[in-house]
Length: 286
Image 1 (tube, rainbow, N blue to C red):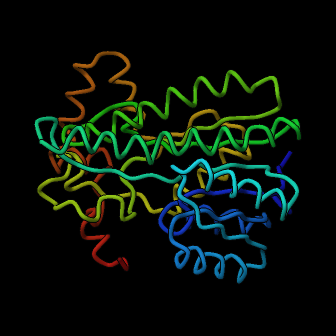
Image 2 (cartoon, rainbow, N blue to C red; image 1 turned 30 degrees about the horizontal axis):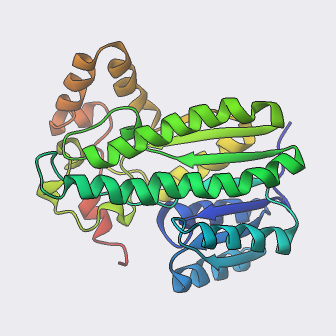
């Protein structure tokens, strides 16, 4: 049976740009009611206008997910306006590149952990009582392929994304008896501005000539994950080859990661078939 999102309330963090914006528009096209959260009030206003242009209703709440008080106000505002929350998409976060020996590495881990993991935990803990009272709901946590296999120069991000995986797996089992479903989405490199500030030579080696996913690709996967109750979604599907290799043996996983640094092999595996990340991002507004 096809699940309808008409008049379902979807709360999205990090909704002012990138994947969050694309997810908001994807659910709006399905008739959902949107609660949009991000730090940028200006960015939220733009996305809210796009949602309304699609015929859906939206509530924008400027929110820093690392602030318990701000998150409490966000959830209270959502319930006050719409009376319920049906879907939570935890998308807010940051990412930084740099080698383990870098003087900034420890601080990069702390910053990323605070925004991308503790922010997610904070929002989830505030939304769960609402879902429990309803006896239903869905939570989607945005991770990354790095949450299953780390690449060189992206260790700080991978540490946190592995944490998102562990948090999600534990949460899924804890809430299963409450009619609440938990999905984790693992996109490969995506054309958002997450790594806009990183120079091409500083990128994780496999990323330097990889063709990124579009934010719309990821958004469609998020909607499908909620509709079908999927526990895990890896994008693109062929990235499962890397994760399978890593599961079988770290040596195999490392060999595949190394192979992806060679353009001809990446092309053969259809991971490099168009513009690179930096070529794509150059055409996007900042």
